[in-house]
Image (spheres, helix red, strand yellow):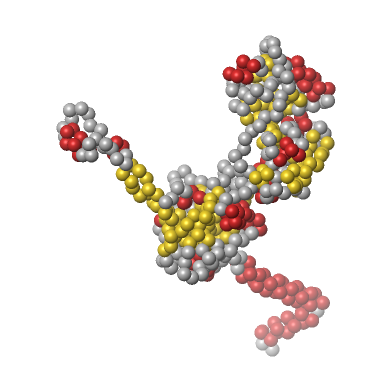
Length: 497
């Protein structure tokens, strides 16, 4: 028997033994696991696109370049060289620039701007940014195939920087649908298409870096992405991997004006509502509650006896829907239209989206209890503050007092007139703030007017002392003050410990 035959026989004998059978089973199991892992790796790799080419081919025909023209007047006085008296050629330049008898005439010139947009319907509605077309005399859109069409402005919404255009063509246009930005997740792949720096159609890919970003607007809901966005991309679409628009590229964060991987696209959740209203009415129609609000902080919650730091604190009730429904300054709005209110930004967006003329339930926290009020929403327009009537004012000027790090004195008619306050405003004027005090840390300054303490009107120093004593008797650690700074009201909770 050869050496190979002997080795084979020994292996067969081991395999027939009990330990051998167990080992063989383990080897089979490990082989199966290896096979499953080998099959799974290609499936996982499929989550990362090998190429975006098919998606780019699919969506590019619906993306447009936008060029605007604006006529700007230029005065000759601004362009004429300024020569010192007696300088050489002074007479020559004066004769040249004053050939019309010394009358400087404005000379019109054309100013152009570039941006991007995308078609949302076969009949030619196009979405872009308001800042791309703002003030334009003429708007031209260029399609992927080189077709150029003049566009008419349908409507704009400066609050979200969205504009809607319309073009008329002799055929149905390729368009792209909106997707659900609420379903998008941080880490998802996205594709930005547009006209960066006027270079024409360009595609860039990246991921969603963050959601729910706010820049400056009340209705901001930006998607942050690291897909390259530059000047000229404004108004262009941000696509998900299904070719749906989940954002409108609007802004970048950059120290030099170029992309550093921090771009912002207004979410389709916001844009779709705006576009619907612009198509229907030519303008936006947002719901209006008629209150001014501020966020609830931990010290404010303590001062109010609110169990949790939540909701939106009402600082002013205007002549409108909320006043008619019984909402009061100092109420904390905990729920709106059946949904809990997280903070002021959440409430503002939900009220705006709720519609005009609807009656909604508003749950407020007042005097330690919850109350449900029915408010019929109005149309949000330019807000006009109508102060509520105040309590009777003191006729005699009162001496100042030091309380809670504040030097305060009763507001006199003369002070009210000098400060330009409405006749119904009463309270205490802050004359000085103690350095290092909680009042200074909370932003109180000389000239502020305290109109309420402990959610009760104050018109004298004794009123403030009484409110302070009541807070201490109730075991509070803070006293809630209503403070007007430059006419704008806000609540401030000062420590009384």
